Image (tube, rainbow, N blue to C red; front, top):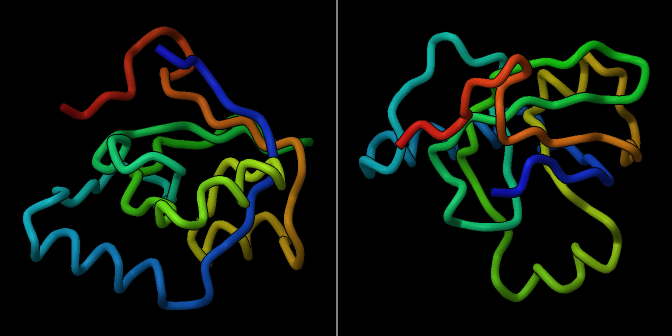
Length: 120
């Protein structure tokens, strides 16, 4: 299991992640996550429905975040070449003061303290 990835974080435009969440719930691909701090998109479609934690530079580890989206297959090589690892929802981007890609963000697949982030 990959314990973590480190790289660039970007953020979705306002309202876009909420639309993705609503669609994934309607399609039966995810279930609502009341305890989640927000929503993210990762590279791999196999991560949709998992919970992850994020550690941005200078901030405490936050989470869990529910993975609700993934990169299009045609975009994956480009994103990897840029060092991209995660898109966060608009609200998280605003809370973090993001106005550009944020380097050095760590995506953790296991909850700090040892519990697994796999929701399956």
